[in-house]
Image (cartoon, one colour):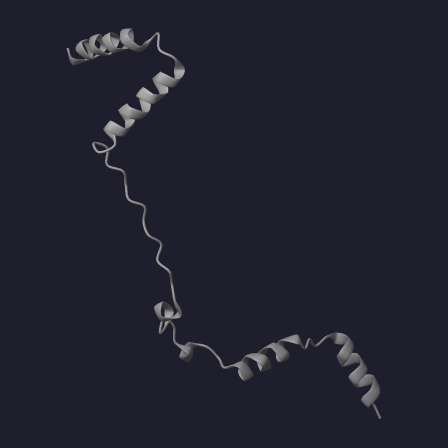
Amino acid sequence: MTAISLKRETDTYWGLIKGASNEVKLALIKRLSDALRPAVVEPKAKKKKKYTADDFAGMWSDEYFMDADELCKVIRDGRRVKSSRDEFWDKFLNEP
């Protein structure tokens, strides 16, 4: 029932403006949409928080991590690879 009355009412208004120029129709669209703005609630944009160093202070503990000297030693020791070639030359050069 409301759809029929809505169509009848919009047809009445359309009959009044269908011969108008595009500029007039656009102006009318703007006025109608401005009239609807208060009825339509627009979601507010979330304000992005600006982070500082204080926001991250105390988030981790150094007790679970090794210190820099120990880390360097682990890396240095990991670079040394022992191969069978080294064993061969050790035996060859050190035989009496």
